[in-house]
Length: 311
Ligand SMILES: Nc1ncnc2c1ncn2[C@@H]1O[C@H](COP(=O)(O)OP(=O)(O)OP(=O)(O)O)[C@@H](O)[C@H]1O
View 1 (tube, rainbow, N blue to C red):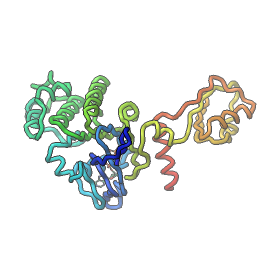
View 2 (cartoon, rainbow, N blue to C red):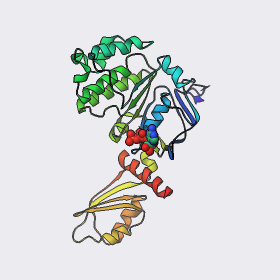
View 3 (cartoon, rainbow, N blue to C red):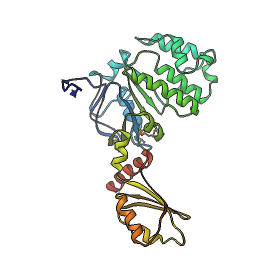
């Protein structure tokens, strides 16, 4: 149920819906009771350390694997039905490209197979591969291959685009062009879900971030909310003279301490109280800075806290 700006309540079908979904490989719970809904027009980043279950989640979403329990639905139907209807485009990490064809032939094939295809020329141009359209697929660089995968994922009018670490191997220019295109897709109401190891991409591009750890959802919110959830702030200053690390380590609300030469870096759960205590030690911190955590630090803090809870 959604409440609109006018206060009216409307029901909208989730683009993706996971209800208590689990996937087990032997003793490994790759996906563990995952429940979440994605909505039209959202750009969602899926973050998690190696082995967190990101690829397994995307495989379940795309119907490439079957859940051991729970239900996965896309647009209120099964993943297979949604894909058959041409509503989903995917760009996965693995999976070789057909080799003995040119880039254009491969893209044309993808367009021919799509129920709602875009013109081949548009697809090539959008993916930045018009200039290499005549090249054999087996002669491409890693970054060019990624662009071809991207073209295949956007060969038709999909409502959901699923990307597993899409910019791996792309240079900075290709990466920027890629995300500009993805933003356009989201502005047109498409839902974009991407798994990434580049936290700065999640921070810059996603309007919603899902943090997965051991197959469970640890955090779900905007990048700002995830940073706030980590609950710590960064304090940085310089000290003159010998530094007594033991005294610093005993500061209140300390989450971490790093001393490098004269520079002291602290993560604190209560920055005001920690800084006050630094002065209380009779120290005179110079070039004092207090800032929130970056997404990367928040992500590490959240997953480490979960590890500590489980150990
Ligand atoms: N086919 C499989 N057989 C057995 N175990 C598997 C299989 N696929 C994945 N796993 C295990 O399930 C867990 C989740 O793996 P998954 O590939 O989904 O994680 P990921 O978050 O995508 O990791 P990465 O960031 O390294 O790509 C891991 O412990 C992995 O070893």
